[in-house]
Image (tube, rainbow, N blue to C red; front, top):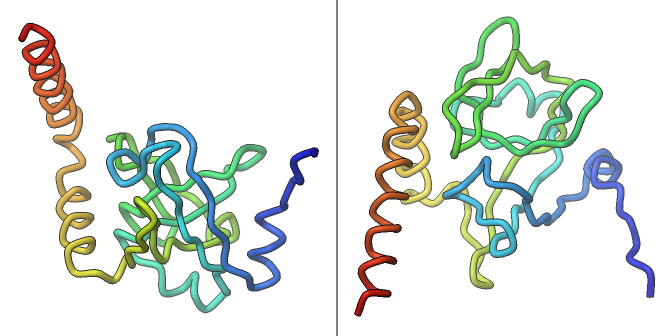
Length: 154
């Protein structure tokens, strides 16, 4: 049976929430490809006005793909976004490019809301640490590789 293509932008425009499996590594550690699902709610004009730093939004790059990234800065020129596994900002992104907002995610079959206090604390800390992310991620990968090599030596 052929896989049916779904227009997620159309579903959001109709006011329907969607569940997607993010691809790529730009939002690691929040999302691991193949493991997690993002729950995205549609965004109205009034909702765009209430977007703030830390929100994760689904947006369409000009002449490009849909991307799920976190708002790092809001200015009169637009929004500046960054993936959780990145340190470089992208922007300004116009409000009309934003299609939806992350309301939660599903990991191991369990739903977690972005309003959960642990999520809020972790995401705010990670956003503040943006300039230090390359070093932090390098260190975490080094530790992972060290323990992987140590366990294979046993």
